[in-house]
Image (cartoon, rainbow, N blue to C red; front, side):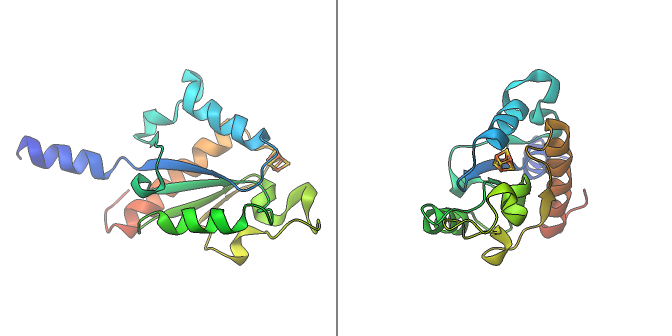
Length: 149
Ligand code: SF4
């Protein structure tokens, strides 16, 4: 097997992560930052890394209850992410609205607008739960690519 083939196989198994804040209180975002910055919870050990552009992303992690103010922008950015993508709802807010449920400025839950592949309940979820969801999202992404996890 050539070096090029090996590098291609390795890179296709290393999804890039992108984070969208859909009106979060920042609690979930702090936990996401933990998985990016704290060596104990380092998400890169699973071959994943955060990227700065939706156009480079494979797995998207969404926090927050989807407020009226950001709804259009969140959906536009989500549509910018190329297929096949995997969507993870981080925290109870995107799953059900959480403590903001039925608030006058809340348009969520997020699955009213986009398909969600993985839910991570919690307020906020622990970093371990987020890591577990990323590993699950990675295997869903590989299946969508027609590869084995
Ligand atoms: S789930 Fe909790 S910590 Fe996360 S954005 Fe909602 S209120 Fe904040």
